Length: 192
View 1 (spheres, rainbow, N blue to C red):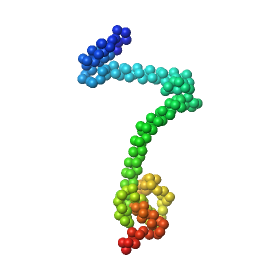
View 2: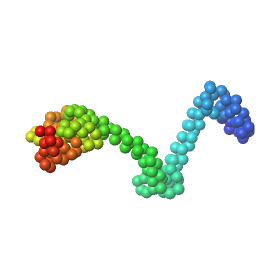
View 3: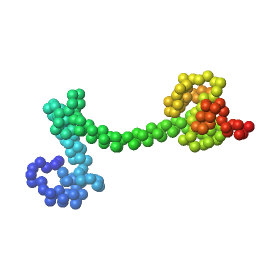
View 4: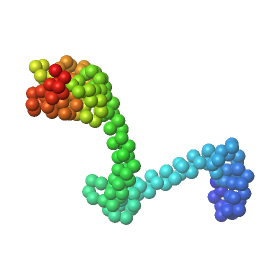
């Protein structure tokens, strides 16, 4: 149990630390590299959390910002504009790159899965295999499904949800553009 009186000294604290004892109660810390034993650590966390909770509730009741306690926040907010900006900046700096990387990875995984379902990760016309250049093409003469005007991730999601319906293939952007605008691809004419 931590001592409450003023006789607690730095000298005693240093002595307990050097001996590997809990600096609050003097008990062994069970070969732990920490300064306090588990019960004292838990007690400190609970008391600190309780203090923060009371402080936050008092600030809210007084109409002040719950974080800094200086400025009264706008109506409908519990945090002032300065603290909101700091929180937003910290959040975006920390989590946005992680979220973007996760989204990109999921998108690439779905794209690869759809391409594999439609013949593999290569162009059906010219054989281009770089994923950055590949896209899904609707075969002429087949009925268009609900994915009529979609492209990219929404199209891949719809095709997967529909169980990869017939009438689609993998083409590179050049072959896809040539098929759509000129009615045929120069690669097909060269191989005939």
